[in-house]
Image (cartoon, rainbow, N blue to C red; front, side, top):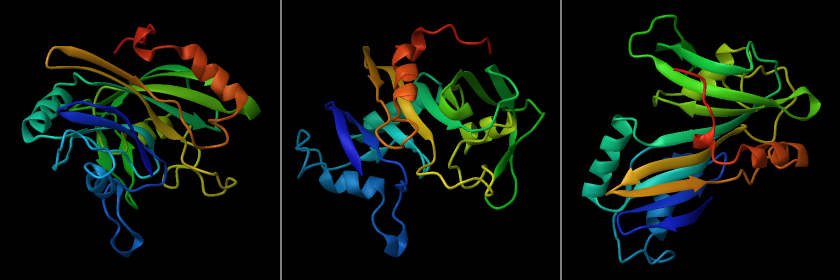
Length: 235
């Protein structure tokens, strides 16, 4: 369900598997937060911490990097970093539809739609902002490197859908007529931030999904290097 990749006195960084809900799902079982919290002492032995505070979340279909604070003060500090957009987040996604454009900026307000979906608006009041690059991979599919500058619900899923390139395996935004996918192809790939004067960088390759793990896709991802070093399209 998850792996610990880094521990600090005040926080941990883990990687979440795809198709794991963040919160408990009734009779279905414990969610990610409960699983990590129950393991923090017995499995990790993390400096005798006995509390855990979520500071951001990932959708059920999304795999990759998540930060948990281990103290209330650390949770408040990370909350401020997120609210001030001082934590850089980078995602990988795959679509099997040709996009309206291959790189650039997706920007607009967001509003609730139907069946739990959201939609991108033309308005620029408190907009969702996403920069992206895309790369050709096998079988007419494209790999996306995404950099969100806001934290709206379903932001990246809506952004790619607005380009006419919804994420492969996304049960809300991708056409139901397509062949079923082995996962939703969205992965929280990299994080960069400064905490208490110290810089931290994390990069995590996808470990699930046949297309993410194919030689072609892996070769493209490996060429990306550190995503913050790229010349991103202007906001």
